Length: 208
Image 1 (cartoon, rainbow, N blue to C red):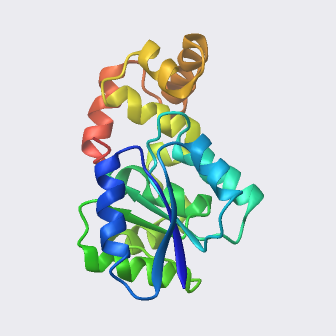
Image 2 (spheres, rainbow, N blue to C red):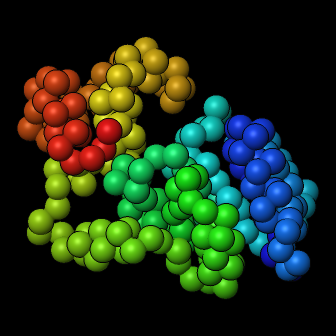
């Protein structure tokens, strides 16, 4: 039996996923959580074989949740389910240890297929993402944003998405000064001096 924990802050999304999964005779819901704190508390109480994780949680970002899981339970398969396009986050999450990345707009049949493959020890990615992963094996020709750390890339996406320094600081639970420091590093690594340059770059590279 495939026992799934669903981690998403939207009740409607959790309910929809549960209805899809519970129709399968060899799958069941081990639990659900609306934030990272609730998830890790639940994880210590129930048996599960797979986690479906949204990357935007109110108390902790998906990268940090995945890193903690990799430290505590490195063999537990994690399927990322997100509204963010593959161009934004997919490659980074797969490289960070996720077993698969699926858009929330995917069909129910694709979700079930992804769960089965990930549960069996495989990796689940779309055909277009598979091409990107092959491309990223060639370190000599990477786009500028691939030189950023995961945190720098996350802050880049928030900046080009229109978030203020204060808004980013609140969302990531860090100080505005720290966000400003990250922004300076991002601009230096990408050789861009103002936000409009970053926004133009992000648009050309399908990050927004």
